[in-house]
Image (cartoon, rainbow, N blue to C red; front, side, top):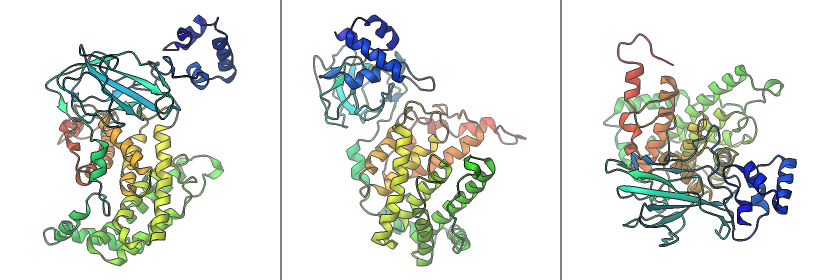
Length: 467
């Protein structure tokens, strides 16, 4: 009977092979009526302790990355990110790694606490739980050859699981860059309990304020910019698209407005943080409250206009943290709810859709959205329960295959313009991770060569460079 449910990479072949099974035949009929993938129908009706082979070793989607590392690969980062094809609606995955020739959990189990991995020596078997189809260890592996596999969790407690996937192998050379992701406990311990916690920690504030005497021109320029926008009119909530359809003219108009609104909000809030002058803080507060008055599921939602919600997320999160002491409890609650609604929408869009970003990363705007989600989570950490999950997701993406448009040679497949803008946005995330979370993000191999790319596509003295 087990073979009847062995719906591995070729569901149609298995369905044909098991047509004599009455349950299988009925499932096939239901699948055809509803137009559903066979493995999902099976997952909904098969009970007991597992769903043999259901959901493992699936065919990668056309726009997906498939399985990483490639079977037999020699990796350049230690530990390498592990990636597999996701199954919608599951409760997570178990991942196991062992050194080739040493053993697996069937012979020498080493069960770790949820979300926590400590690599033993020698590596017999390390099993951990992952909420995503992308998993990175928080400890490096010793040089050698390794095998890994995964299985699907159908229940939160892990009492109902699939069989293990087939093993895939990789080799860790002595030359691999050591870059383990931070343990969740480490991240939790390093986040300040109070504000500010965007770009800097509370203990850094006095040193930053003291820099006024060392950098008077920079301070003067910053305050000049703040004075210019001190009485700027608030942006009105965008109206629906004319005729109910997106059009370039209105999109461009609202894009210009939200970019300026985000700049006003950040500039005023930062001026307050540095000077303590209430005029800047009150002006920044007006922008925050204005953003909070808009419908997060309306014309500035991710679905309707993602540029609007992304700018609101990152500028709102920074301003919230920088003028935190100036906000009343009621105002903090309003801003928190606004940011949390938008962050939850972003997380659903990235992770819970039919093509999770961790497997299908080629949507350009999602290449910014994930770290805006991380920034918002950092501002709300400890105040909104879901913020820990959102931050963990952002860290998973960064320590995984990011950036998808560039590899360790530092290139950028989208060209010079997108290289410049996307890395400029990403620098804010790097600053948060480095200064606030105290994580060595600069060790990611991509950044060792990222500065080479503009020299190749736009060398000094060049008449023009590519887009």
